[in-house]
Image 1 (tube, helix red, strand yellow):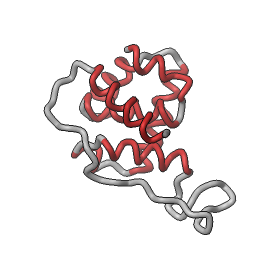
Image 2 (spheres, rainbow, N blue to C red):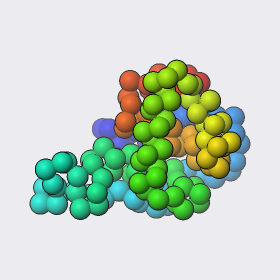
Image 3 (cartoon, rainbow, N blue to C red):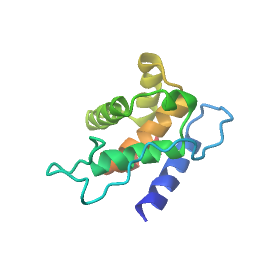
Length: 134
């Protein structure tokens, strides 16, 4: 159910931006690593080094990936996701975060929108309303 909600939220967030572009969302690269009980460590990570929540975050991004997101290191995307949540905590809007990502991080609005949506769904769901209303 979470996957369906995440996909719906990502789709809604992508449609909210006025950033144009013709890339159709779709699964082009899967970064997600299935976790098994044998592969889990005491810290809740598997042999990929990512927690289950981080894996969900990366999986959600992979559903709506762009060439520039494909080129990003997964650990860098996880750090960016946490920075996005910190920005929401400080009162930033989704639009401000997307624009700042384009100016400072060199990612397109489409890519930033995907990362903002996945961050909100997985790392800071308390900001879902902020992310969808901007």
